Length: 194
Image (cartoon, rainbow, N blue to C red):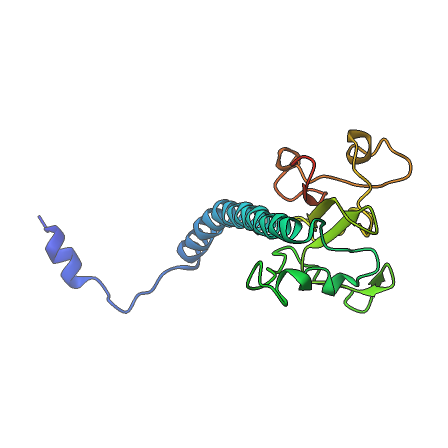
């Protein structure tokens, strides 16, 4: 009776994998990748949402300190988007740098919104126009789209505005219960937090 070692010793070492064996391995790896990649992308999106909320909290803290020093929030109506946070870093540094929105718009760089170039930072609006006493900050959210009208003058939002029931304003709030990558912008406002 031949032992296993005898069979292995006589086995042809030059023989490779068959096509079927290779296809089975590729199929198994494809199934594992199909399971792992969406989970990784979902975790990455959740992480960016957390970064955006933390950045907006940092900006809000700087805005509150600015308000204490100046008895108003920075003016935004006549200030171009890319300069709205400049007063938080210069001449007095309330924050060292303005963070970039992790959900910055990556397309249509030549397009304009509100007759201004696309921006790569958070958006901010304040009201009333002369001596702002309230503010709103928003991020584009995971859909990388500006789902809200430009916020030059933060109108003092009501629930009707945020839910889309106000015909004069078009705001959409990001809600992860609609799916991690769903429509809507991430908001932080001085009156209440969403």
